Length: 322
Image (cartoon, rainbow, N blue to C red; front, side, top):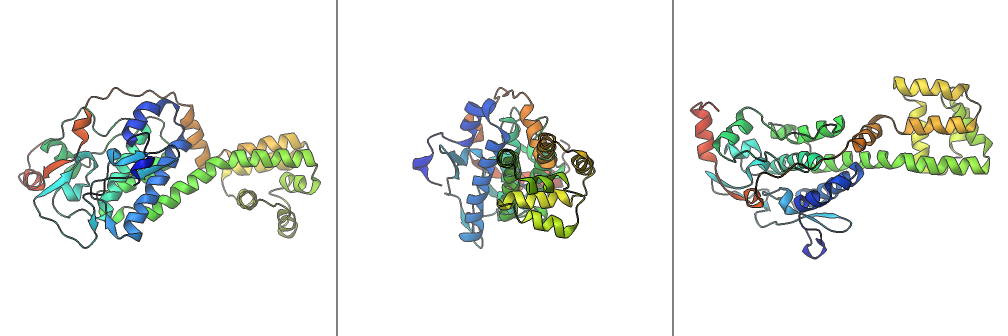
């Protein structure tokens, strides 16, 4: 939203130039920044962006910003019917059909499309003409942009919710922001735990070592007493969470913890637990060799243009077979 800080250009340009070295943590940081800006537009200003695509996201050195609010408007403002202005792949199906004007839920749809773009570095429907045929497939057949191979399942699920055909089923910007921030916290946790374990190891803290060794078998009173000796709030919550976990894989690691008397083995087991679940999905995705596809469409193709919702609606009503 602040042009002077956008020294890396648009998100699309940034992806093309940096895609091969971007980690999932970096990709999620971009989406976290965008979800925060969208939250401010929706909840604080009570506005709709109404032209949300990767060309309208600017990249600074540390942060990403939503830009180009020229078509934005208050949530209670109406516009002329029959035509809209936008980049077709990012426009929600209900808007393409003319059933609804742009809403906050339509902005969320665009966010979901941007999520697919971040997985591959490729713009949505690259190489496909943005015409009546594509619009009909988006609206009546549920066609959506593809995700890159190896994209974490949790990420795909969130993006698909954002791109749901029913605008009422799409998450709010606040929900998206919370989810992505939770992922980022989980991804960062293994490093924090590793540092914490090394600190315990060097200090010979026998009570904490006992807690970690007997994490699933000591009684509640003893567990809570030892747990209170952990200073770090996030790590304390993590230890509590894994102690009461019903995940079968973590339960197997519990058994190994209980039978181990070597603190180095305990540390390795805890690191393994820390890299389970969602964190593991993103770690595995980072191991995939990234290859940036050749762009088939020009940049001009992804600039906002007038789209006739009347023609799209008529094509579907007339049951034109695409």
